[in-house]
Amino acid sequence: MRRRILHCLHDFLPDHRAGVEIYVHHLATTQQQTHDVAVLCATYDPRRRHGSVTRRQCDRLPVIEIVNNWRADTFVETYAPKIINESIRTELVGFAADIVHVHNLLNLSFALPALAVASGARVVATLHDYTLLCPSGGQRVHVDEKRVCHEIDPKRCVRCFLASPHYQKMVAPPLPPDSRLTRWTVDAARSARKLFPKAFESLLNVYSNLRTQSRQVTARDVSARLLVARRVADDIEVFVSPSRALADEYVRHGFPEGKMKISDYGFVPMAKRTRRVTLGAPLRLGFVGTLAWHKGVHVLIRAVEQLPPQSVEVLVFGSPRTVPTYSAQLKKMGQGLPVDFRGSFAPNDVANVFAQIDILVVPSLWLENSPLVIHEAQLSHVPVVGSKIGGIGELVRDDVDGLLFVPGSADSLAGQLRRLIEDRSLVERLARNAPVVKTMDCDAAEWDAIYEGLLCAS
Image (cartoon, rainbow, N blue to C red; front, top):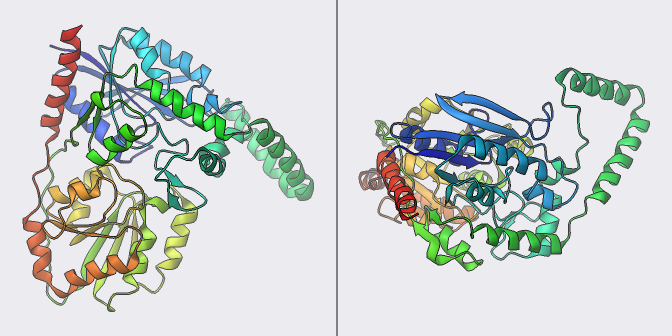
């Protein structure tokens, strides 16, 4: 039966291209063959009015985009903003979904599932990260301390949130939404800074301090957010986690085990690797993903420092604009080493990226779910060397189709890479053992069964 399905997530293509956005795009596009499908997402754009809505298309997929400029006077407004709630409510009623499929409530609202139920929809969710548990972005990595938060400590969460880009948005001075007035305001500010630098900086500091003081965040606020997050589960009938590790973490922190299902992502088929490893030639290592600290690219570079000269080449694929300071640090670390920063790539270039490398290195430091990049490597028959953390160990069978190493340890990673350098036949053996990856058609069929089970039971 043809159903109306609305996928909800924090942001979307083409401006935001990470694992969740890519997966939702592929799933929704596949579902369009048999259902009426749309995407509800958020975007940050100070040039547009907070709470305003834009309708657009992404590869013929209808997208409803709500502007969330984090105009939050209180911490509650960061996860349940009233203006955004009203926009969500209007769009849910207008779309009249049979199924609301939640992927990420960051930038939207924890109230979305309840609003969806009130609109007459049944609600399901795919768990992709720890957004419901972690107010600083969902990775459970302390921004300042540069470490994984294995336990949720509200006091430490406060320190992390205050150092996060989310808090910077919260306390940033609002700009007029009209684009001409915005440009005039920015130009006037630049002129004032040039003409009266000391006075400008003093005024800016006073203003920033006032906004910061009025937007204090406490451990009690963080605890209250976690309580509200657990209540979100009351309105979501099924949670699907692509990895056992992620599901276990949510259950450990109070989410209902009875609503939890484990089912990995589906993928669109890709071309297999045609490149063969040549004896005597440098082994081509690849990193593909977001250039951010929690992805651990610096660990890979430190490991390369320990390898024999001319034994490897490292190709780093990822946009330097995501976290500019970290990208600059990586480039400095890579000076004098065989590290080539290739930047981002077009969506239809994924197969070509994997055709250029012999080994994919996934040096993640956070509790990964089920990284899409590992599946893409396996579809291309490119072996993976990955951190033994989170769901990575569920995807990579050590010494069967890939190798695992101690998270954060450049020594451990270098040791595994040395094995591959010294025994090129090991690379080929690991490649031959690449596992079968679930197709997107199969994934869509599994979701159809879940949807129908809920709708037919009502």
